[in-house]
Image (tube, rainbow, N blue to C red):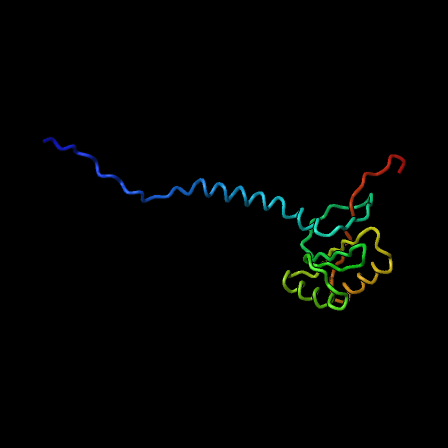
Length: 140
């Protein structure tokens, strides 16, 4: 009898993770692109429009003032009594004392001034007011 000589079967000892890595990287890119839209869209705040608005990217603490006079920091509604303490904690954790105020265009002037006073009392060194830039009219 003749024996067939067969090569020893190689055990499955390697896992190809390249497709898995590709999928993970694609998901990471998708989340990185969509996360700013999710955060800014969580609360319905319409910024006032201004012709002289400047584009400036800062890493300050963002404070939102909604149309129903709610203070929002880090996607959490903060009661007025806790706003100063919350800002002080954020100043320490984010290593900045700059504040970007994003108030709804329908907020009353008195509420806006109250927010500015609270922010200044918390120790803000620089307060920026966020607006939406519009194109200048031809006659201006």
